Image 1: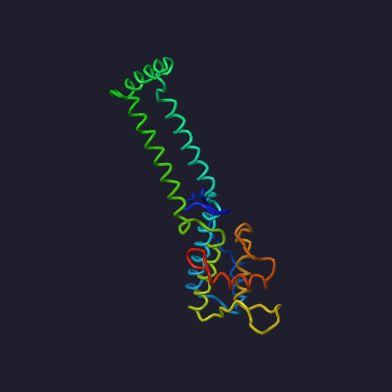
Image 2: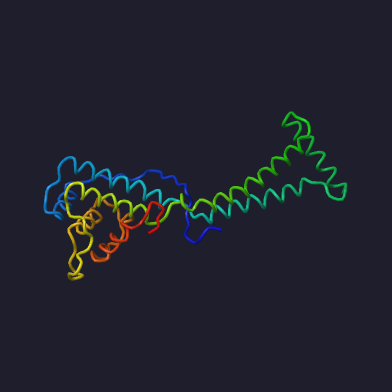
Amino acid sequence: MASRGQKQPFAVVHNRVFFCPDDEFWQATQKAFQCGFSDNQRVNLDKIIDRYFREVQLEQAAASMKASEKLVGEIQNATTKLLDLLTEKDNRNAEKYTLELIDLEVCRLLNNDHGLARVRAILQDLNRASKNSLETMQDEPETAFKSGLAWAEMVQNLTRWAEDYGLPSAARNEGVSGDTVTPFTDFVFAIQSSACFPKSMRAHMHSKGALGKAITRARKVSAYGQI
């Protein structure tokens, strides 16, 4: 059984939003580090954020695994009920007459003998396939989309980006006032405050202090959403 909030490992996004940085974005992000960015820095930063846009939209679009489990259960119940209806019981005349008529029609449609027997076999296979699908769902928590994982991966990629270009990457100033934030935290805040960064994709923006703590946590998150 899926845990509360567990998502599917599958999602489709229509009309996805792309990251399109404007001049104000570059001014604000460069101001956080008190330096200008080279063309190469800009290109790589653009790629990191646009990748986040793609991943977070998939993450948000992924349905709850419980919805899939519910649908599989309904398919199992429906096939079980239909198999029961298509099976003669106690040699009742009404069933015998009805099923023989249906069998004749199915044979005609399929252009094959033993039409109803074939339908029963398909329904049995479908019932088993539904059961197996449910077991597969329960074995897929590692590959499922997880809320917050895309953001954590963006933070990790931004950290590597800053370090690759010799920019400060500390998220919190140890031993100083909690009101003091680092250039990197200012940088992430500036990214998410930008007009080209939709509010629905922002996270931990209620204060810079909270953002710094969230960045520290995000750096400990593995590819499976675990610390």
